[in-house]
Image (cartoon, rainbow, N blue to C red; front, side, top):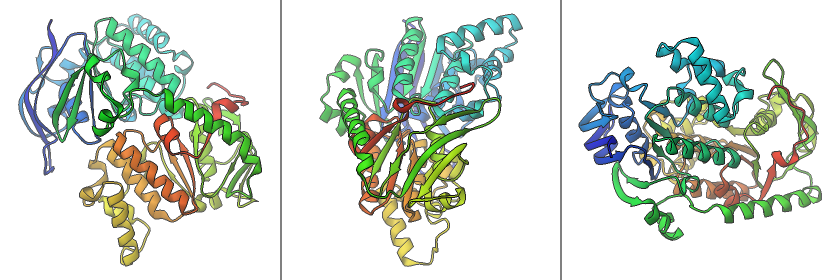
Length: 487
């Protein structure tokens, strides 16, 4: 059996970095296999995926040694356009790989670059849209899609040229349970068709029965290598000790259902909440616009409320409305029992966005956490140092936030929320791209905020976080009484 990926003593250190990102990686991946790269955030998974698809050394520069052949080509000397028809990639942040505003144009882009005739391109688009169930999205603007929908479009575009090898970096980080199951079906189909698949992933349960091997990275090295049967036989304690996510989600789903039932029966009995909605409709106008009616909700001090539901059901639009970034389509948001204007909501709450790249502004992690605060105040400095320690960011304090991994950036944004001192903290997918260890750290910090009397609202598809750390669950999908247009 031929190897689509062959790495021989590959090491790599990014420009201006003090420590190597990869050390002596030797690995062979046979054609048609599915290999899972797992391990703690920043352990080298994403870097190795960039080695495989040729982005290192073509686009990400640094000191590289060893030999890498992908689909028979030497990635050190092969131009990236030589790898394009052979290797499809989905990045951790799919927004970084879009070239067009409309979905249909994004799908056609790879085929147009290869000079395919229009008729062939249209056939490929139709086939791909059916395979990924994205026909209703074809004429939508990418900018108006949910994070999960954008991820599906990125995966669809990556397969437009029918590549031999597919490289996926955290492909389920923004997907709901139904979309993850669909992703599983699609990846299984692609593997059955003979495609070689390399997945860098924290969420592991969906890959049961698909993956052939699991590689556990630690500090840039392959620390453990398991055949699938051997890995799946490991105890939960062993999996947890390696900082890996659960292999069986059923207990977490049972707990979520219990929390949702308890939440539905307890909200009306609570005292005056910090934040409420009454007869609220959310959304925006225009060709790609949508509106939906939100059931009356109450959010209280000391709660950690998990806001769940399928991709595109309005979760992110709701939290942007609750923080004053979007005006309600109709209805009222109450702050301490009184109708609140958008600017009042903005002053009262802090939102950690789904894409944290939009809210990282400073030249170092420490400066980011102290942004807007008096840096000469010893109390602020002490608080900042404690937050850095709590989020395992102390060693990155002087690094530029944009030089960090996706999971590390996520922790920086959460650190800013911890520093802000506001009563309402809203986090949109705060554990996207985080390993088990750092997910649990985030959960503990949410509990600390709740214990301080903060109201914490968490938009999440992370069933482990929701089951383990939320006190209440609201599922917008189960309260679906909305009218939608073109969505």
